[in-house]
Image (cartoon, rainbow over all chains, first blue to last red; front, side):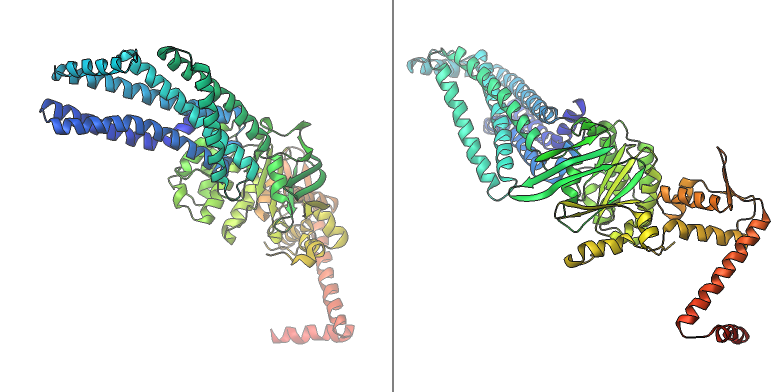
Length: 247
Length: 235
Length: 119
């Protein structure tokens, strides 16, 4: 299992390094512009960092989906399927590697964000005013949501779990399409349709289950449901691969 | 050692392998023969545990093939399959990580005899180099069964002899080796059993030297007799 | 080595070894390569290689000593007999071929000395 995870990481570490490199550059720009009081560049670097955080995590997932698609549809799949590992383990390696990557990247960007916000608040004392304004604005919207670290932590957790579930949904959709069509024409389109249907079903389930809950319970339950759906789809995907595997 | 019991594999409405029953014994090198599309590759993939028969089953040492048997059955597909970010050294490490029967020393030895450098990148390999690298890493496993799908494809004459030597070195009395090829002449001297497949069906299983002794018949002759109408040996 | 695929390979390899014995390249009592080594040397199936020695042993030309390996027979007489036998076969082959071309025995024999003078 360790080796399966290791090689899933080997397949994708290049782009992860690139994301990390760009982030380091943007962070440097942020720190320098903060120090030199260049507000325009400071704003730009904050924008870039926000984009990198969300984009980076999404990209990690998309890359994992593409790798999975290749392993299902090209001869490089032999590298996995000829090893004495069941599809449960092979897929497990992918899910764990990708889950870890997404959560580590999430924690990293969250910590970096927290650090930068603290620096920003320390540097520009008046930002405290801005936060108050936002709180006031939200209160007027009658949303009893305190704008604090806990909210952001829960939002981040919810985003990460949902994204992991989305990646596994994509695996599942891809495997269904490949098994149905055996890599024939429109394979990609069919898997996209299946993916949309499954994602909609999961969103519907989340909505139905959490409708009556308050905001924090809702976020937590959304994350739990996303993880539950991930587990179910993982088992279903591996079972399907096990039965229909043919590279 | 390997037993195929009425194995059938369908792809949609097409029958790739049709009721193939045979028993392959250790201590022999089998030549699996037949034109393209006769079911050689599909049968091998099933024996390698890479796809499942539609009906029937393949047994390895009495147990149906599957995840476990992959640890003892080394399969080499005819297509290149290494990850293209790898060097030949990485390929060796990969096998080291996944197969207990792999020997890095044997791999290095085989690469040397095939005149391949470990530092070569998979991406940059010519088709002939790739074919040799696949054989090297597959034979570097001390497997109980080796299945080589078209090992001579895209390989020049000199390298073919090296490969044959490597295959013969591997063929111990307790091992089973199966090679498919449509280059029948290449198999004459190194295989001792022949399996003829046509349209997914097993046509004939023969002991090659017996065939020569009793009927004065080479496998190429036999091949022509069986597939005559389908265009000869393609050699 | 190139083989004639319609003649048993073991027979062709055996002939090769016999020729080496007769010409002295493999003297009496000489140790022969092991079965696997023979297989690699001639690029033939190991079972075929084993058969080569079995058949040579049947003819009394080699001796397989348990755990020691295979040796050319110690007896020069056997090798002499082999030589004579191979020469006889060669002559018979020649005569058969000439007969198929329509030559009488006498003519065929005469042609040998004619050609010999030219060489």
